[in-house]
Image (tube, rainbow, N blue to C red; front, side, top):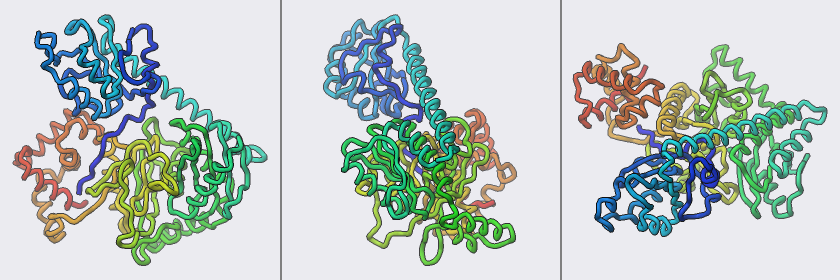
Length: 545
């Protein structure tokens, strides 16, 4: 079973190309392309390759001195500028920076024409400016933007917490939230009526759309939905599963930290509206007592208010999550749980674990297999982009907290997630291990979310008992050293990448090399042979304990 991932842009806030051009110490000059204020950069990368496509993640300012362009060698017209620029655009490059001298005295005219044709911003880097200086300036601007965003979120959290302690906590939280987002904040009751509201009054069309979005989240297993109406960004947050209270937000624009701020407000309002109204707190307390007294997981799962699976069996996802920056705290962990639609959150060390009820399975032929951003692809695993799809709502591909029917939890801004397959309560420990491996792969591939999913394969043709016995015999030479088996599993799952395996295991790449060499020696196997790799992967899959 493999877990595939699609690279996404780094989580650090992007910076405007205009901000970089405004640095007098760099002396950069834009030659062609869209206005600099409309171009955002996620990083800087230097490459003299004639095809930089394999080395770009998307959103970079690509820097080159044109060493690979033979015009300086007296062969004008022999380089395919159009193909070169097309590959940069296909890789998602944000802009191209061309350094003049010592290779080229001016920016080649063919390159200017190709960039203009493809709409790629072209920036001239003067001889006195080094590429490392440009890259440093980009990272400085990104760090400044990130710090500004964190300060804004922190100030908003403190303000919302102070508002929640006032004598009129619900109106105060709504007023503070509306002020922070420069929009409208509404608390809807179980019957869909406005209980309280604050902020700028929107037009009738926006007001009706926000109320409809609130009704949407109360009737679906997900807890969050977004939409855009008349240029206004709408969002709805269910305040606890099955309780009927919803926070609605309408704002003229959306910044990267707005979702986090609104999620914090949703958590506070969930506490303020009182969990006792649905009895879920008492039910979860009863479930905990029964577990401590020896009850089986499948016996107490119905008390947790999960979704329904096949027949009477409740199915659940286990989600492992790590924040993109810093360590998780109780508030951010609760906000993540609210976004995923579950109050069952465990924040320990650097990882937050969430037990999420799976929605009912769609009837055969009636399920939805989404495509595009946030898609669940027909592979052994699927990855979601860091930004949840915009405009998802009643008419979109699905709410933000949980994907369309059967797809499970989706990516959340500011978090890296690993999601297990949906399982019955008796399989929770196995799902916990699945989510941990998925999170490690997500971090290694810089993806917002990686799912663990199973499908029939050749390995399933071997009886499990025989497969496990063969696996233990084959892997016996490394069985006494768990670190070796763990490293081999991660290395094989990441297609032999030393760097990504090191990231997944939080060790140095040389440590990975040494462990893999030790595995090869102990197993007496040629790990460059694909047949050997396949057999070892099957063995690791069937090795339990």
